[in-house]
Image (cartoon, rainbow over all chains, first blue to last red; front, top):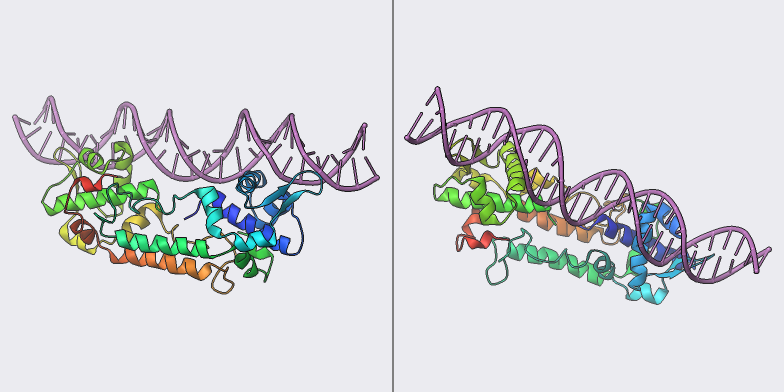
Length: 144
Length: 144
DNA sequence: TTCTAATAGGATAATTTTGTCCGATTTAAG
DNA sequence: CTTAAATCGGACAAAATTATCCTATTAGAA
């Protein structure tokens, strides 16, 4: 459903947010370790998220990544998915039919529309804070 | 959502079924042309569908692909997706979380379950015949 | 100032997916 | 029997995604 890059991005953002709630800025190394992702690849994804103002990066010694409390409240999962995967999840006919649209729908068109709308709605209505709050039970939880 | 291979497979099967309804056996060349897919790649996919008894292939001169009327009634889209993409669409947590399950769900777990169930249900309840019947309006429709 | 720990970013590599090529095989028709 | 039209299947190639490596840059602390 999502690319690997996007999954890593969602997990990374979630972990950063969780630690930021405790006032801890976290390093790339720690993030990759905790979310069980390849470190250098995760670095690329975090660069992307940083450029999209989704996470804040701090260079140099004692640097790392963090997310402000206001940001994790405002930020929806859809913003993360959008930054990494774009709108590919929602785009076009589910079966790849070119001329399938509301005017000339394929037999499963409306079902696909419903399913994708549910997905979009979920992503647009879930903030990163809600995500982290629901996960506070255990740290190892973010491991893939 | 589906791989390219799977989209081609669904379109190819749909086109074959449509033509079979008119008693026409169709060649690989015609299929690839009509569904706008790479011919050699489509051949591989049709081999796979043939091995999975989803379409019937006839070798030699005047050969090609066809699907019997009883088969297109029985066959659900889920069988095609399963043959090509396996169960990757339904498998695991949507965010790639390892220990995310019904016992210890992530905040979006149940939403993902719902969305995937809707998808599965649609695929399992739509026969290839229904698919073709809904498309009989126009042939060019299958072009991607 | 210098050292050290950290992110930034470009180049490269491995893997997977997508796509192509070509010879072998099959089968109907002449 | 020969030929032509078709699928089968193995090897190969290209493109996209995933992943790694290395150097540059940044910034805090001694």
